[in-house]
Picture 1 (cartoon, rainbow, N blue to C red):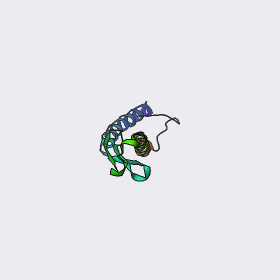
Picture 2: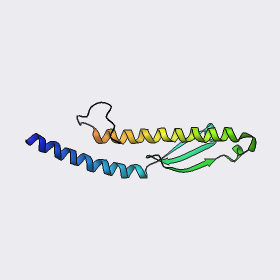
Picture 3: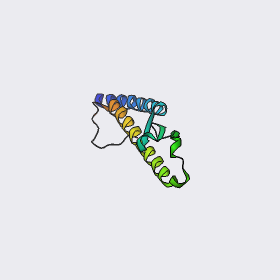
Picture 4: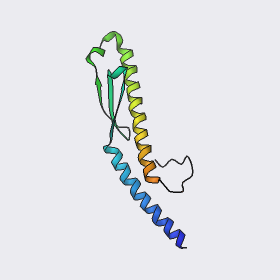
Length: 106
């Protein structure tokens, strides 16, 4: 019974840390780029896009499709970095816990 109480306390502490981590991920910003820095996207670690910056030389009506593709690539780059930051923070939080491999907590 003592082990069960210990596990319950650990689970409650983990839940509190998870809530704090989720709040923290709202404040962490990452940037992604494409086209040699011509297109930059900034977003939170949760994936909320905060801004897009375009090199003025890229805004040419004939190259609209290229620009759109670069924006998508920059957003995907930023999203990948956001997921990496979130995974690193989650790894710090769950370090030492006996969790099954591949378990997704968020």
